[in-house]
Every structure is written in structure tokens, then in C-alpha cells.
Image (cartoon, rainbow over all chains, first blue to last red):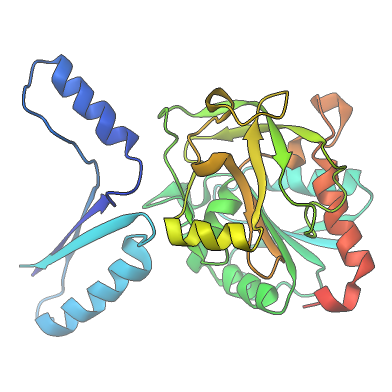
Length: 80
Length: 236
């Protein structure tokens, strides 16, 4: 089992990386780009036999306390 | 007065902080990140650098180190704590200070001297800065853009928690004088209780004429003065 966590800057937070990537895409001729947000991807391998619900709870806590900073970031956690 | 200067893997301004304190005639010693206690100290400096390689987010890993549990307890007891540059990021991550530091608006690492306007002198970190005096101090960071949500900012203003703002040589808050895009030009803040502060600029690198400025001394002298004036109130 794997946990996949996507961390992105909150909408209210300046994202100069996203803005710069967006303008680069435009300069390269890729039309229709309305916004770019650059974040992080964290993949966690879970030990065999891990209880899915328990992992979900523990990882949500870890995302909130450590893997993301709720002041500036949102996260999405998926276990598959 | 005894200062503790924390040392994380990849701290790189720890020796500068120790040097600055000694130049001022006080004592400082390094405290390793794995230590569980600070023992007998009057104030803590969380120095600049790239603690734990800045992995994940600046300060995110340092915040969970054993020594930071001791710093939290020290601060909870009213002890004086100042975080400089990466130290500021660590204190925000540790929730000892509100808000967060994000990537500079320019995406550039900025290494230059800036001017700071002191917003309030009613703190143990600013009391010795003369009224109207602008501080000329260096910055060196890539992720120093201060951010807090609007409710937090309202609270901070109501409690006079903004200590320093980036300004130009005339003391004006112009866009050009904001090196990282910080919200409201914020360079440094304190907590509600006014015993924990953080700033992106490096006062420890501006304590001797040889270094081009000794304005940074005023911040350390404020700390020293606070400890001398009210030793019991600030003891941990």
C-alpha cells in the first residue's frame, strides 16, 4: 500500500513559482493556461498488513502537523 | 548575561551569533539540537542557516528536534527567545510565532543590506533602539516573504506585534525597499506575550564597524537591558 500526498500553496498565498512557470508556458506558446500552482508530492510506502483506516487517521495527522504547513498550504491524501 | 545559541545540522550563523554576544561583553554557548535541556540560560538565540537542509520546508524538521521542546518550555515560562533568519522560520513552524515565511516574490536569493524601521519600542527586543532610528542590517535569504492570513494580521496589529518593517533610506515603505515581497513589509515580529521574536535580517552580522554597521547591537542591547531590568519576570 502507498500513501500519496499532494501539497499545494493556499489560494490566498503568493505563489511566485507558479506565476513564473505560467509565464514561461505562455512564452513557449502554450495557450489557454489560466493558472499554475507549484506544490510538492510525497509518496509513502506503507508496511504490508497496515490497517487502512488507521493509516488514514495517522497520515492525516502527520500531514497537518508536519508534512504540510496549514498556514500556507493545503494537502490531499490518498491511500492506494 | 548567558545566551544559548542553538546548533542544528546546517546552522551556519551560530558562530556569528556567539561572536556578536561576546563582542557585547556577554557570554554565549552553543546548544546541540539533540540536547533535551538548555540548563542555565537567560535568553535563547535560534540562529540562521539551513537547518536539516531546509528539507520539506524551512524549519519544518528542526521544529521537532529535542532542543526545541526545551525552547518551547523556556518560552512558555516567559524566557526570551529570538530567531534570526532560519531561526525565525523555525519559530514560526514551531507555532511560537504566528504566520510563515515563503519563497521570495522575486524567486531570488537576496543578499544585501536593507533598512529597517522599528514599529514599536515596547518590547524586550526593541526598547534600546532610539525613536526614529533606521537600522542598517544585512539580509541573506531565499524564503523570507512573511505571510499571515488576514485575521492573524488584524490580531497582530491590534497587539502591536509587528516589530520591524523593510523601508528605504528615508524610512518610506516603498515597494522597491521590500526585498522579498513580505506582507506589509514585515521583517520581524513578536508573539502576543512579547517574549519571543523573529526577524529575517541578521543583526549579529552588524555589531562591529568592521562589518559596515553596528546597528544590530541595538537589538541585543535591548535583550540585555530587558533581562537586567526585570530578571525575575523573565526567568525561565
